[in-house]
Image 1: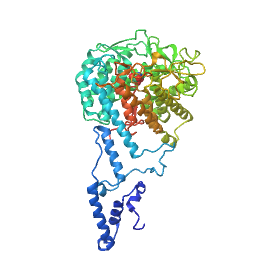
Image 2 (image 1 turned 30 degrees about the vertical axis):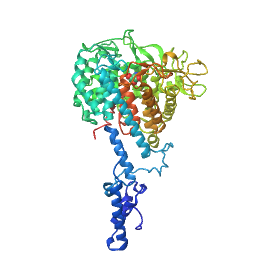
Image 3 (image 1 turned 45 degrees about the vertical axis):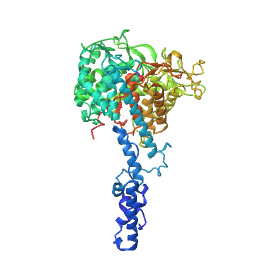
Image 4 (image 1 turned 60 degrees about the vertical axis):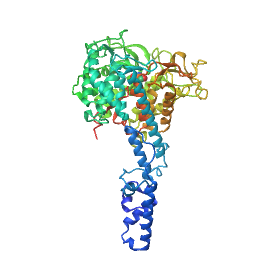
Length: 633
Ligand code: DMJ
C-alpha cells in the first residue's frame, strides 16, 4: 500500500468501506494519522498541517445542520437517520470528522449491484429515501387529522360522522375507533393519541363491556379484541417491543381483552355445533344466531389468530380450543377445489347455499387459513399442516375456477360463482377481494423477500404461480382506482369479458387505458375508505421490492386526501367515485384508522418496521407476533 492510498488497512479489513466516498479532509487526516514518521518536522508535514487547519476553519464556518425538523416517533427518527446517512457521505462537522467509520454488516454496494436488485429494481438512494420518509409523515398527519375529528365530535362512540359532527354506535358501542386506532398510533409514534386512546380504554372500556348488549362476534373480535392484543404486545406485554411509553400498563389491555373474550366465547359454547353463533349479548354472556339463522363463512373462520394469541399470553387454552374447533370442522366439509360457499349453519354445521366468492362473507376464510398456519409456526408446526393444505388447494381452485381476463386489455380478475361450481360465472369483483394479492404473496415467500426466497431455493412452482397471480391482481386492483375520475375505487367492479359487457358504465377517467375493461354499476360506486388495496401494496412492495407499488400507494393516498378529507376533522366515505366533486357520506369507518392509514404508513417505512416474517396482521391490520419469532430487543 502506498502513502497516497486513501484508506487505512483498518478500513479495508472489514465491511464495504472501500466503496464509500472519502472527502479530501478525511484522506489527509488518515494519511497523517497512519504515517509513522514525525511528519511535522518535514516541509510536506507542515504544509499538510496548514491545509488541515484551514479545513477545520472551513468546517466550522460552513457546516451547521439545516433542514426542517419533523416531529414524532418513527418518522422523526427516520428523518434524523436519513440526514445522518446523507451527511456521512460528505463532510458534516467536527464530530463526524473524528468518528471511526461505523461497523456495517457486509453488504454489496449499490455500485457493485449496479444499483439494482436481481429483479432490476432500483436500490433506494438517500434522496428517494427522504422522499418516502416525508410521505410517511404526511400519512401520519392524516391519521392525526382523522383522530382529531373523532376526538372532537365522537370520542367514545364507535364511529365518527364527520359531516354532521356526531358519533354513532354501529358496532355495539365499545368505542371501536379508539381501539382500532390505538396500535396505529403506537406504530406511528403519535404519543398524544396513544395516551388519549389508552386512558379511554383504561377508564371506560371494561365498564362498557360489562353493560353493553348485542355485538357481532366477528367484528368485535377482529377490531376490539385484535386491537387490544396488538396494543398489549406493542407496548411491551409478552416480552413485546415496547414501542411506546404512553398509555396504561400493557396488562390493562390484556385484562380487558380477556374480559371481552370471556363473554364472546359464549358464541361457541352456546352453539350445538363447532360453528359459532354470530351475535353475543355482552352483559349476560349469551349468544344467538343471526336473524336468518346462518353465519357467514368468513366470520366463523376469522377469529382464530386472536383467540390463539389470547390463549398464548393468558396461559388459558380455552380460547384457542374453541376457535380452532371451527377450522378443524371446516376441514371435514365438502368443497369445490378448496372453495367454499359464503354461508354456514351453526345448527347443522354444514355450508348453506352455493354462492362462492372471495368478496364479502367469503374473503378472510382464505386469508386466515394461511395466516393461522404461519402464526402457529408454519412448516415448523406439523399439527397445523392441514391449514396450509386447505389454503393451497383453495388457491388452485381460484386459479382454475375464478380467474379470468378482461377485454380488450387483459386485466386479470377474480370473479364469482353465485350458483356454485355448475352455475354461470359472474365477472364481479368486490374491492374486498383486493386482500388477495397480499395474501398470495405472503403465502408464496412466507414473508421473506422474493429475492431472499429465491436465493434460498424456497419457492416451489406453485409459489411462483401464486406470486405471479398476486402481481397481476395487484395491477388490476390499482386500475380499479385509476379508471375513476376521483382516483378512488368503487365498492364493486364488473369486468368486460367475451360473454359480458355493458355500455356507459365507465369510471370516468377518460385517459385510462382500462376504461372499457372495468364496468362500474350505479349502485356500486361508493367508497368506504377501505384498506384492501393498500394492504396488498404493502405486502407486494415488501416482498418484490418493486418501488412501483409504493408509487401506486402514494397516488391512492393523494386521492383520499383530495376527496375524502373533511376540513373540520376526519375523513368521509363517498357516494360516487366516478363523479367530481363526489358526494360525501357522513361516516368515517374505524378501519380507515386501524387499517388504511396504517398500511400506507408501513408501505412508506423501512421493511424492518413490523417485519412480515415476524408478525401476522389480523384481518383488521392488528399485528400479532408469530409464535417464537419476536422477543424484545
Ligand atoms: C375490515 O373490517 C376487515 O378488513 C375485514 O376483513 C373486511 N372488511 C373491513 C375492511 O374493508
